[in-house]
Image 1 (cartoon, rainbow, N blue to C red):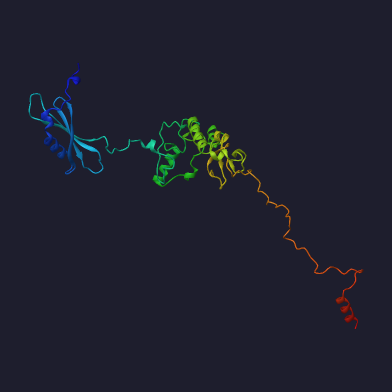
Image 2: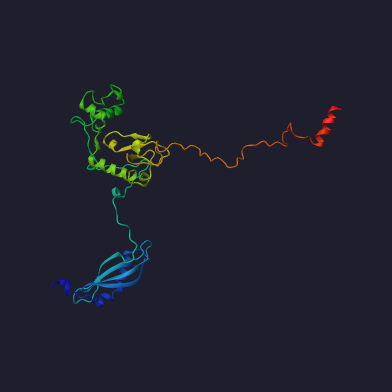
Length: 308
C-alpha cells in the first residue's frame, strides 16, 4: 500500500487552528489591505493544511490567498511552508496565450508593421539563381556590397546604376529573370494551393453571388488574366461596380456586373387605347347644307337682306 493512501484527509487540529499564522504570512506576501476573510481550509496530507483567504486585489475576482502550514511528527510547533495566490472556481482568468503568428489575421498589418517570414515557411521554396552565387538583390551579394561601400566612401568608380544587377542576355538566369523566378524564394506548390483555396472561398463558384450570376467571369470583358499557373483558374476583376473589383476571382465566379449579362431593355410599348384621349376629333357645329333641302324661314330672310 502506498504512502499516499495511508495519509489522513482529516485536517490536523493544530494546523487547522493556525489561522493567525497563515493570515500573517499572506499579509506579508501581499500588499496591505488585500487579504480578506478566511474562506476555508483543506488538508494536503498528514499534518499539512492550506488556509484560504479572500483576495481583494482589483482585477483578481474569485482568487484566494493560499497559505500552507505544517508541523513535524510529535511536535506542537506549526511552521509556514509557502504562500501563493491561487484562482478559485469562479476566478477571472486571462485567456489562453496564443503566439502572435497564430493570432495574426488578414488586415491586421498597418503602415510600418513588419511581418517576418519563417525560413522554413512551407508556402515558399528557393528561387532559381542560375549559379551558386547569391542573387544580385540579396543583402550578401557582391553587387550590394559594392553599393554599400560606395555609399560609405561617397566615392565610386561608376554610377551605382551601372553596377551589374541584372544577368546577361541569353543566359538561363536571364530567362528565369524574365519569368519572375529569379528571386530568393518563390511560391511553393503548397503555397499556390493555399492561396487558390483562400481565393476560391472568397470569390469562387460556390458563393451566393456566383450562384445567382447570369454568367461566369471567364466570359466577362472586365476580367484581367493572370500570368503563371494561377492564371489557369483565376483572374483579376476590373469592374468598379462589382463586389470583387480589384480582387482575384475564380474564372467560375460571377456577378450581376458581367459585361455580357444583358442588353438594356427597350422602353415598354403600351397597348393601343380603346378610347384615344391623346387625339382631337373635329366635330362640325352644324351639318353641311344639302342642295336638295328646303331652306328654313330664317335662311330666306337672310337671303333677301343680302339682295336688297
